[in-house]
Image 1 (cartoon, rainbow, N blue to C red):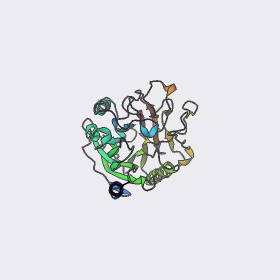
Image 2: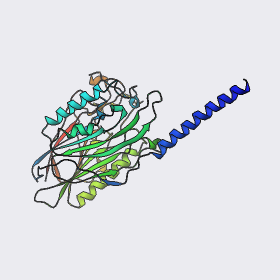
Image 3: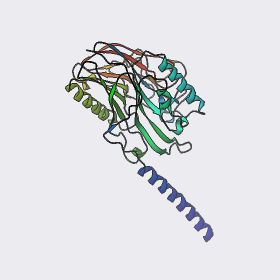
Image 4: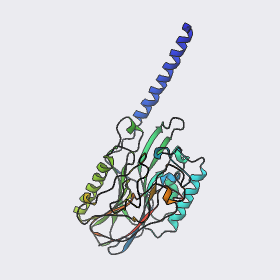
Amino acid sequence: MPKVWYKVVIAIISIILLLFLIGFSILVFSEYFPEDRETLNVEGESTKELEIDKSINIITYNLGYLSLDNTQDFFMDGGKGVRPKNATTVTKNLAAVKNFIENQDVDVYLFQEVDTNSKRSYYMNEYDGLKEVFDGTASFAYMFKSLYIPYPILEPVGHVESGNVTLNKFNVKEATRIALPSAYSWPKRAVMYKNPILEERVEIKDSQKELVIYNVHLDAYGKKDGKGEQLNVLIENMKAEVEKGNYVIAGGDFNQTFPDVDLEKYPVVDTKNFVPTQLSADVLPEKWKFVTDASKPTSRLLNEVYTGNYDKTQLYVIDGYIVGPNIEVRQVETIENNFSYSDHHPVKIRIKLK
């Protein structure tokens, strides 16, 4: 090789390495570092009073950033997809969920994976869309705040801003983002999500006590004991409130199979991809309980487009609730919709404060 070409090749390689180092440094120094506890804005107004001995309806629903409906697969679940082919999918799913909100008799919605400014959902502010059809307050806690996710290499996820959303018809006294331990080590941690708890405190009529509601999304893909560490933080926060005499309930996507689920009904047939561990009721204090509707799946694996056939789909029951000792559960129901708008189904619970 002539000397001049040798110098050209060295120069090109040097430029590529320099650009890589610059990009890597930008991602590292732009990492989102939330505080352990952060006070959140509570938007809107609520006039409904929470009363002892009155039923409360709550729904938890992982929306899959309104991009993981039954027409999609996902690269981290064994599929190939990164985002829908166009924004129409996101627009359609947002409209459907808004209609769902308007037609449910529900006091509190606990949503997970709601995008506000992300390439994967065509930069649509889904939080604004959900708020505008709900008569009550809204709060948002970041889960993802990543400048740029550089993988997959051929079609990077790109910029992501996403989190948990709680909509509440009752008078919210305060909303707080509680940080959970990261399930990722550096450098992957720099671009991965930071799992939160969105805590809301609701005043109770003629009482000094409060109902404390936790909107939860635990890790799915990180280190093996990551979910356990995060669950312990949630339980410790809930226990502290019960010791004060308050009522507590946590709802969300636990990314773990609930204790009362019949594993023969939902066998793990795809061990190459996401395999949830099973929650143990023993981790909860006496008289507390895990609650879900185990008769129906709450989530599916995104290794392929949904077939419409449960027998040919990897299914899970990973969404539901932890209910404190001073709350009566009156009903729980998974609302099946053929995974039409998300890779999860909503789970509705009716409770009463004792």
